[in-house]
Image (cartoon, rainbow, N blue to C red):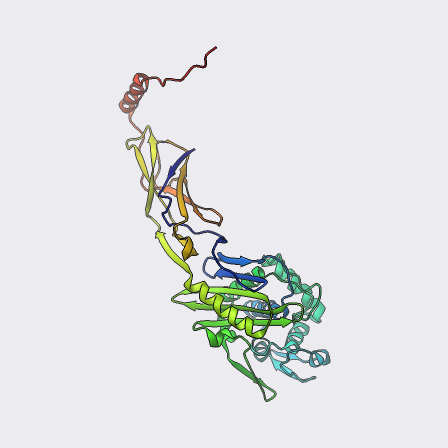
Length: 382
């Protein structure tokens, strides 16, 4: 295996997790995720299933969005309100029993007003019962790769089987934005009025951070105060999730601080574009002694600014590589490492082809090999 070291301080990494950054939070559970790449920029107990409170309503919303996308549902569909939904406690949209409500209004009741009653209406009309809808939530969670989540209801009402990790909440948020973007603007609506009762959006980020456009808060005695938030600035989007905070005020302050950190403290830079040469491979029996190695995908780095000088990249290949070499033939890989993070590998390809030596060239190479001075090796004394 031929290993060619690059400059250790060369900053050309893009890791799946950057965990050594000097960042702390009073939240018991937290994550910062880059939307475009899905990279985890910061995490604290991120994979631990915990009570999600109303943040789990995002799963109910995502299932509705999914059925809107595939044509099963329409925003104009009218859903019947049962007595069970009408009697549901906690935060409410204030639905009235034996009425019908358009799905678009129910979505606003869930997203803006965090209506538990609206969630029951949706669950009963889609699956027939709250319990059957919870089964659908669990099936979709497995299908969507949310392996740290289980559901017992569509509302986030306290239940020992209602658990989500903050990482799953971040993954779900990324899915909502990516796959159901045409409905995402609902999360930025500042207020919604139903039954002449005006309720403001509970998400403090909409007022405290320029560029914030979602998504959901949550609170129960068991979970503490939590928030799923996202914002976009200069074509960069970040997602944050916090849970286990002590008060509504602390939630607002910490969520705002972390979304600022997500943009201000983490730098994103492309060091190699597709087609750029990152090194050379030695060639055996070729008309050229080396072949340039190129990447075909951008080599980017997202890392805390304090760790920018703690990265290295290495070209790795089996060599010397025997000719002939075809253009775009995969030769090896570029291994990039960031302090405290996981290494990532980028395939390397021949930037140009190298033809094999002709007959005379091979004879000359063989003669050089025969005439080469033998390597002296120490002999152990007997």
